[in-house]
Amino acid sequence: MINILYNILKNMVVLLAPVLPYTSEEVYGFMPGEKIESVHLNDMPKVLEYKDFDEKLWDLFFDIKIDVNKALEEARNEK
Image (cartoon, rainbow, N blue to C red; front, side):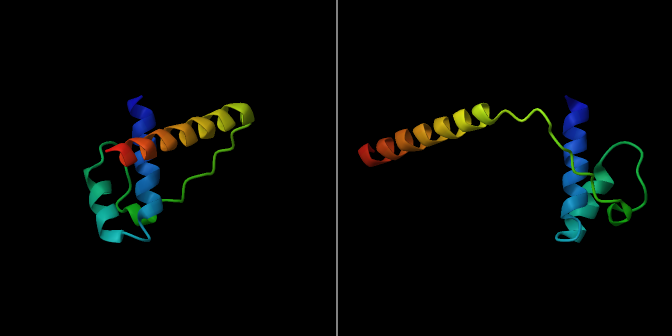
């Protein structure tokens, strides 16, 4: 689990480096592990392709999201 979170953090820092150069450099400096001298010298992360995409599960997720949003709206209206 920690390895997954580390990879997400590293990829996000590299992707944000052109937009937030100083912040990305500082975060990169505090990251543990072996790294090169600057976040700006890293290659952009590779795009991962997911072959086992479940369309039904994705539709279910959005149906649940719609139901939750309706319930929140009703709760806000009732205070």
